[in-house]
Image 1 (cartoon, rainbow, N blue to C red):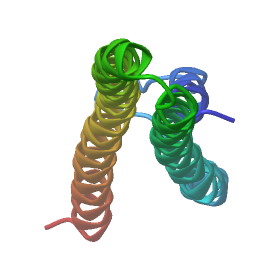
Image 2: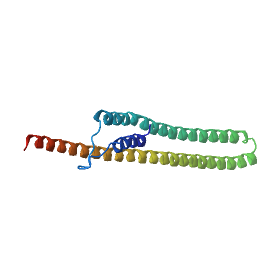
Image 3: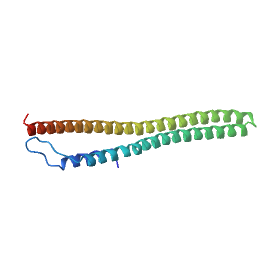
Image 4: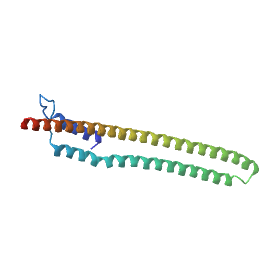
Length: 165
C-alpha cells in the first residue's frame, strides 16, 4: 500500500470519531492508530526498493548504451581492415570508418544522455514522492503529538476537577 494510502487511512480513522462538542477533541483507540502507523512504516522499504529498481534500470540502460557503442566501433574496425586492399578503397574506407566512429560516438553519447535524463527524471519523481511522504509523516506526527498533548491536558483537568482543586 502506498504511503499516501496509509495517511488517508489514518486521516479517515481520526475523522470517523465523534468530537466532544465542548472541547472539539476526540478519543481514539491507541492500538488502532499504532497499528496504522506500523503498517505505514512497514511499506517504507517497498518504496525504497522501487527507487533502487529505478537506479538499477538506469545502470542497465547505460551499460546497454556502452555495449552498443563498442559493437559499432568493433564493426567499424572490421570494415576498415577489410577495405585496406586498395589505396583508394583504403582512403574511402578510412573516411567512412571515421564517420562511423563519430556517428557511433554521437549515438552512444545521445543514448547515454537520454538514459541519464530518463534516470534523473525517475530519481527526481522518486525523491519528490519520498519528500512528500516525509512531509506527510511529519505533519501527521505533529498532529498526533498535539492531539495527545491536548488529551493529556483534558485528562489532567478532569482529574483536578474530580479532586476539587
